[in-house]
Image (cartoon, rainbow, N blue to C red; front, side, top):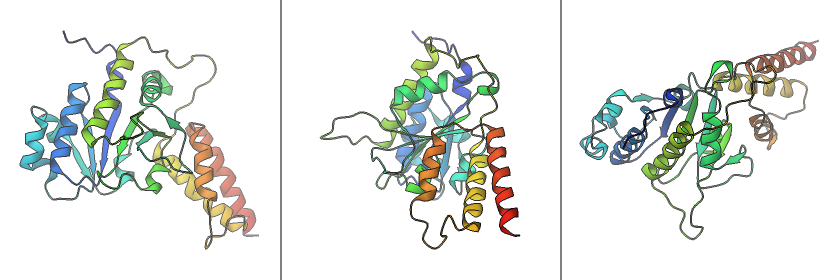
Length: 256
C-alpha cells in the first residue's frame, strides 16, 4: 500500500541536478527513479546531445515518468542549476583531498528532513556527474557536502539512475519517519544561498590577493581549503554579509 507523504515540504525542496549527461536513456531512467519516490524537480546542465528531454530513448526509459521529463529544465551552467538553493550535495564515488565533508546518503536524508520548516528550511540540490567522468572538482568544491554511497569496495560502480534511486529512497524514508527536526533552541537565521556563498568566496579571494596573502598567479590550495572550512559551517545570510563586509574593508585599506 502506498504511504501518504507525511512531510510534503521535503518533496518540494529537493532538486536533482544532472551534469553533462551522455545518454538520453539515463535521463529518462533518473526521471522514473525520482518519481517513484515522490520527487519531480529535475534540472540538466549541458546534456551532451540536443533535445535531450524529447529524445525517444529518454521517453522510453522514463516509463510513465514523462511528466517529470516535461517539467525538467535545461540550463547552461551549475550556477543556474543552483538558483534558489541554499544547500548543495555532490554525489560521487571518488573522494577528493579538498572535498567538503563526506556524508552517507542516510545522514544527508536525515539532515534535509530535519530542516524543512521556517527560517531553517533548506532548498537542496543533489548533483550527479557525467556517467564516465563524474563531477569536476570545481563543482564539488562549491557544495556543502560530498555524498559517497557505501558499496562493495571491489565493485562500487552504480549507474546514474541507481545512484539517484538510492538518494531518493533515503530521503523519502527520512521524510516519512520521525526524523528529529532542527533544534528550536537559539536563533536560526536564513541559510545562505549558493549564489550568495559563491559571491562571498570571490569577494574574499579578491581581498586576499589585495593584501598579498594569496598569489593570484600561484594560488595553490588556499581557496579550496577555505571552501572546505566554510562548507562545514552551513553559513547563514547574515554571516555571509559579515564576511563580505570584512572583505570590503580589507580592499578599502589596501587602496590607501
